[in-house]
Amino acid sequence: MLIFAMESSCDETSASICRMGEGEPQILTNRIASQIATHALYGGVVPEIASRAHTEAISSLTREAFEEAGVTPADIDAVAVTYTPGLVGALIVGVNFAKSFAYANDLPLIPVNHIRGHIAANYFTHPDLKPPYFALVASGGHTSLIHVKSFTEFETVGRTRDDAIGEAFDKVARVMGLPYPGGAEMDKLASLGNRDAIKFPSAAIVGENLDFSFSGLKTAVINYIHNLEQKGLSYSREDVAASFTRTVEKSVCRKLGDALELYGFDTLVVAGGVSANSHLRAALERFAKQKKIRLCLPERSLCGDNAAMIAAQGYYEYMDGVRGGCDLNAIPS
Ligand code: KG4
Ligand code: ZN
Image (tube, rainbow, N blue to C red; front, side, top):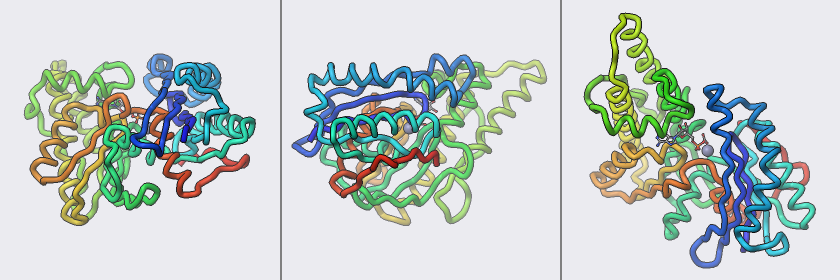
């Protein structure tokens, strides 16, 4: 079946058309209009500007998607849309557009959870992947360890108690004067630094839990920088990026190890914007090899927000009978 999907939960408007359910899932088009350049002027996402930019982009992006896929609305079987979680004003734009599109073309509407979508990006990269498995979602807004019991049954077993992992990357990057969002820049800088140069506190919360605290780690890094700056001393941005990233890797692998002991899973799926980080990817590869489990990572182009991942999860929600009506609303969290 052909699914037309929309994503507008944060600062990327995306429209995708995917063929699902017949052989391997196929992305016919996955158009993304990024607002990063606009928000970079303010050092972070400005919700009001995001909503307006989604409204401006959504119609032309949809037209481009249909042109690129070489199909018409009459070929589409269902419409999937992100309805939660995210910025409410941003979500509403996609939800209302998808509702109108579904209504006008007499198509079923499928509400999709953004976090489930991130995980589902892996079905394109690993077509044989099937639940049950464990997933780590690491993005700008979320850090969760999730037991994926079936394609539509999820149990969150660990989470951050404060900042998301991507948020910590972005805030450290900002203090070092890197442009928003700093995650990708931090990735490059970390390659040039000494991973053992500075000792930062772990983000893995001590005790019998699978939770993280990235706020403490972030504050420790920022204090380190401010301390030196106040004394008029310089510091190596490369070493800070490398040591911070190393601490993130160790914290993540520590809790994944605890989760493995508790749940004994054989497949680990990683998703979300931060799963594009080359050092984290390498650390997870080492972890999976050492623990003799399968590791699935999405290809880099599918790590960040995109609508193809919403089409993939939308397909399984559709098969499970999930439908949205004209009263479908955006739910921020
Ligand atoms: O999944 P995503 O596109 O949006 C949310 O759902 O939040 O994730 C965006 C986050 C940002 O914090 C960004 O800095 C981070 O992913 N990110 C990275 C890298 N690429 C994107 N963080 C670390 N290393 C990267 N290579
Ligand atoms: Zn996301």
